[in-house]
Length: 580
Image (cartoon, rainbow, N blue to C red):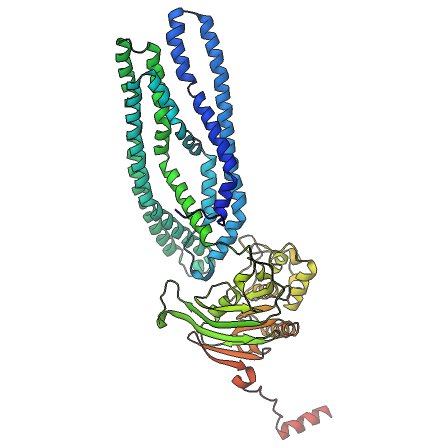
């Protein structure tokens, strides 16, 4: 179990619900007392009503029973609603933080497959169901045992023995469930991830006829997951059946022993029925816990996962909001290993890259495929975290900023671009509610995509992304994503293959945009294959197999740009003749 650190947001959210859980516990105590109504009523009927033959006494007792059961139903409803509200409040308190932390945890391909949103939903559903209420009955089992001991110690000891056996069965059921739970969850996560990625690439899948192959592969994963689930279920089902049978047998044993005690005149006849009901109430919460152990085990797994997840993704809320950076970039010994790799040369993705840029500088990063350009881009914007080295903007590492605050000062155009489900305006604005229409239009004009957007059916309100968005070409998506990267004119802008889907006019517009951004003081870094992408930069960095081989002024590394050659004399005379 992870230590209950106060800075863990999940722990803090649970602590805020302590009052609610305390009220639920108090209500459960009242419910437990009201559950004695049936036993006491049976005792009074057999010992008083039947011996006296008084119908008036019977009606009076029955009226009291009706009132008590009405209160029982009211308190049971109140408990269920309170638990449901607690689950809802937990999801509300942690939903945004969980989503945010999950995005943070996916950086660098080092995520462990944790899904806090699914775990939160599972805990909320558990608290809204009947099983959670039954668990709150467990602390009050000693109340029923105490009443049984008051009836007769022999009956109490029999039920204690039965409770010990039932508790042992419950522990064994939990042990069996935990044995398979983690495997089942990891298998389900892999299965879900494969299905999601297959759907995301559905066009290529259909075009290349991969549907049947992928369906067979997914089914194999499904069968493995179902096999694990079945293995976990078999033991729990056997133990649940045993527990139910044992409870019924124990109640019959109570009746038998009670009858013997009546014959010996140690208890009254009414106590036989009352004792049978009480023994059932003692074992019922344990029996229900065994029957729902898979749900309980799943909830415990989710609880532990959330504890660990929020422990590993603590943010820097204590950091102060630093001034807007000017764009001075310092990169020192930036190194990245392959996921799960050790520090060996063969597993290095990027090795000891260092350079400095001043505000207004433009850097072109060139190199062959797999040279490390995209990895460097992700590290420069904080999308991935380096294994060694650091990136500083105006002298401050990204971790010195409040979480999310640095992002407004960074623009990033990834190599593989997708738009989120929403309007074009929302995508350009980065879904920032504080972005004005002027900011959005200015960014679109800077990316030379304003006129293109106006030609769409609903202009900036056109919905894109997802299954219901308007299909756009690769070039249109890239230019809209470029507008998203340059909105607010960030201090640092990193463009990874920004002209991969652009035509000649798009290349010219990109060059103009980089020129304007540099003139405004932004530091622009361009990862490029095509020379046109680095026409507007003043510095060059060459990568080769993850290592920086050259860095400096573009003219010194690539040479001065070629001068326009004069046409031959014969061609000049021909031109003059045409002009004349």
